[in-house]
Amino acid sequence: MKQNLSVEEALEMVLQEARPRQTIEHLPLAASYGAVLGEDLISKVHHPSADDTSVDGYACLEADTRSASLGNPVRLRVIGQSPAGKPFSGRIGRGEAVQVFTGAPIPPGADAVIRVEDTLREGEFVWLMKPASATDIRRKGDDLVEGQTYLRKGDLLTPGRVGLAAAMGYATLPVVKRPRVGILSTGDEVVEPGEALPYGGVYNSNSYSLAGLVVEAGGEPVILPKISDSVEGLRTQLQRAGQLDLLLTSGGVSMGEYDIVRRMLEREGEIHFWKVRMQPGGPLLFATWNGLPLLGLPGNPVSAMVTFLLFGRPLLFKLLGRTDPPLSRRRAIADTPFEANPTRRAYRRAVLRWTEEGYRVATTGNQSSAVLRSMAVGNALVVLEAGVSAQPGEIVEVIPFPGTT
Ligand code: AMP
Ligand code: MG
Image 1 (cartoon, rainbow, N blue to C red):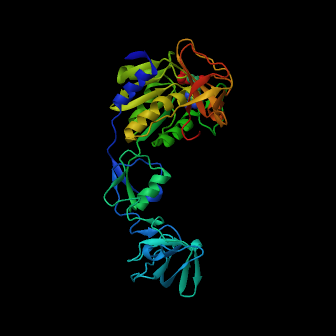
Image 2 (cartoon, rainbow, N blue to C red):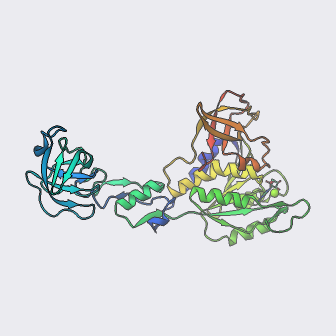
């Protein structure tokens, strides 16, 4: 078991143990938003499917219209209409035009379009006040070419990508099955919300904040019944948990004699590391139990969330084969002081906002790892290297909470 790793060393070990999942399932388009594509997707069609017009106007032969001007308009005979979805079936000849609407195919014979604003209609004739041109013709395949790959395995299905997949002709999408992530809170004092709180008790918040973080990272949370501080209870719950791809425990990884997660895994699992040089989250533990990767998150609500973001989220991304970065970073001007930890990297909860001078960031106040409000009020973490505090006006590195800023 390694101890007191840097954040980078610890993350590397976590990612080494993560085996990307290969299980693919097929979801209808409307249910696929937020999933991760499991295969490359080629377009089944050209888009546009034919040369078409991007404006309302008249299709005609460019050569007929070269002399057209306001003072000397050119007259063409209108031989039909081509609304979108109802292409004109004939052919355009010299001196002729077909009225076209946005998205309609350019009729055979035509090579130019004039916008309706530059024309005057008079019965079966149309007057052109300027020459028609090809600039408003969208060429077949301008956007998508049949057989070409436009979406790749590992792409997160954003709204734009779901739309693109639909445009490419897919009704269902092959996506990576969401990893099942067990969440197990430990602690004699931990009580389920809804029950009466005994003297010295604390409501279980970790199971629910972690479940949200798991969903947001693309996993399927499986909240297991919380257990008290007993090794037997932990063992039983792990054995009952069923098929999981990752287990998150909260609590029981510190130095005390009731720190059962660490004690059990010492004897019955393989601990890869314990303790990371960070604050909050110092007692983080990473182990394998019966082939199952297990992140032992500290019980303090802020520590549990921050360690999940820094280690659990990248791990889930790797299981999913997601190719986008698990966390993004910004530079921001500090509006308040941020205090470093003398020996460990600190992650301070903060409010990040966009202003005319760029990003600015202010502390949420009390930085105790028991103050969960800081994670609710805040939308970002300010990263401070050991011993390097920041004063107002200085530039700091910031990690926005996923899905917020
Ligand atoms: P531990 O890591 O077990 O020593 O717990 C550290 C602190 O976090 C203690 O004050 C616990 O009461 C609190 N805590 C542990 N688990 C939870 C939980 N599931 N929800 C809220 N607070 C918790
Ligand atoms: Mg505990």
